Image (cartoon, rainbow, N blue to C red):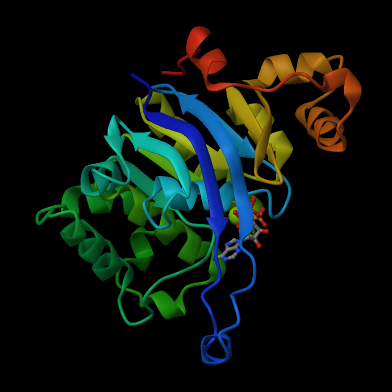
Length: 277
Ligand SMILES: Nc1ncnc2c1ncn2[C@@H]1O[C@H](COP(=O)(O)OP(=O)(O)OP(=O)(O)O)[C@@H](O)[C@H]1O
Ligand SMILES: [Mg+2]
């Protein structure tokens, strides 16, 4: 069974009518289509990359996956649980590290992680919290208030928060944006370890070197549509063994030599998937 199944997903953001528009009877501005008929599946144990330029729809797709945003059309499930009709179980199967640094400044790091544990009904989770804090180099920050942390440290806490309930699927939305080299390396070591332990990883990043080194398979989004979906090795081979960045640039440009590549959900299912455990 695929751990993530996205089936003909479309998302149109529809603006609410403003007060003035309601008073005057004017209609709201037209909606914006952020995702257009996206289908893909991710298999257990995969390290999967979701790539695309700014505004391609990566965070929108993750928001629908996490149940934070509703699909306009299509179905999405995590570990077999439909995110719309079985939201609580789908949410539990997922740990999401959001792109934005969102946190409550009044709590300490440990309190933040305990609150997150409580959200999943886990009362005695301190051993695991200590382990995560140590793995992310946060052990000496456990009792520090969130507002007193640097940006990189806050990002580590977001990663820790996503892991408190030991989710089988971990989604990282640009986790290394704005973090220093040491943290980036430490973070990847940790994520690779989790992947080897069997966690499925979905990663978005603009660092294509990073994606090439880590991801066994990659989907590329452009203006809300999947324009490539293949193993990283196959995508690199398409550009004569150059690198993933070259493949990305050419696919985004619509290079005819690379056209006809995309993707349907069946393709991902039919091919045996390399499981990196
Ligand atoms: N709440 C919203 N209301 C209206 N439009 C939105 C909303 N959220 C995102 N969008 C639009 O949807 C498109 C996709 O945005 P999204 O954040 O998913 O892109 P992204 O691929 O994550 O980009 P980035 O690499 O910059 O993070 C963008 O054009 C964005 O402006
Ligand atoms: Mg984004």
